Image 1 (cartoon, one colour):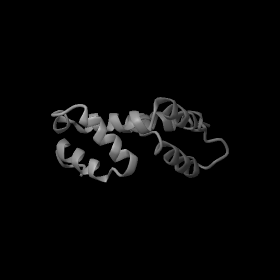
Image 2 (cartoon, rainbow, N blue to C red):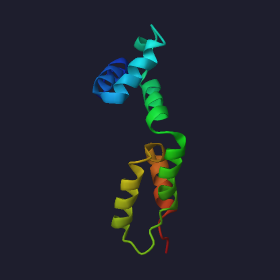
Image 3 (cartoon, rainbow, N blue to C red):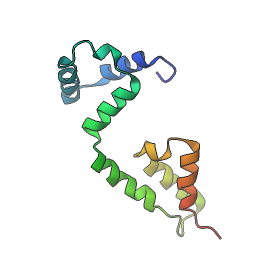
Image 4 (spheres, rainbow, N blue to C red):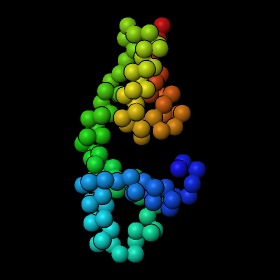
Length: 110
């Protein structure tokens, strides 16, 4: 799915929606006839995030990542926790540069 065109990514993702998410998706587009086919992958992600992952929740999930410090942990254990927490807030670690900056911010430098 990652190497296919945006339009197909959206189609594949919307097929996976079930229950209330599918109802919401169909209702959202029923008010915008003709626009659904033009929905890009980025638009799809923003719509889903806006509905099911609101900004106040993202902020709550970012706090542990931003506060994470190596402390007495080994670098391996710190890295595992960093990776685990980062998986909940992918925007904070979306590039190697962002990931490296966040990671080194919490390292115990001797």
